[in-house]
Length: 136
Image (cartoon, rainbow, N blue to C red; front, side, top):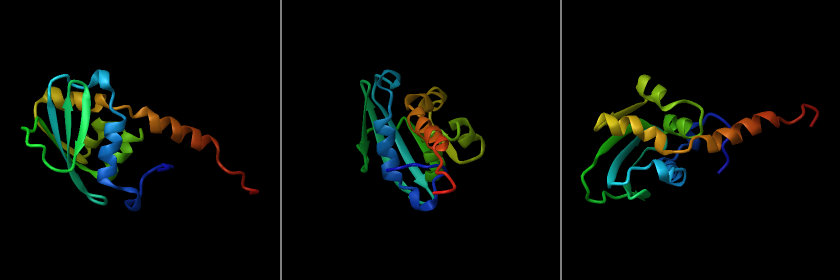
């Protein structure tokens, strides 16, 4: 998938977003004890899923894995995608009402640090530097 800026409705896919979170998790920053996140993504590309983190590894589940949920997140799919690709800080999603978190404040504060949002941001910066010549 190519990302060239702000996602439109047609670019939003909540299940793909959850998979991208899994792919860009920073193992050293993930909780070592089992931590289950319930994600409910709303709006275009809405989806529901769970991230099961255990001993520094993360699994994506479309179906409830049956463990107690430690942190529930309800967020706009498009805004979560904007955060993951480095366009906005997570705190802005919460401050602007695009994301709500229910669970211990220590987990809510730590959640955004568990993922590398620079991967796509660097690509977006490079793409912005390589704009086609108007004569083409």
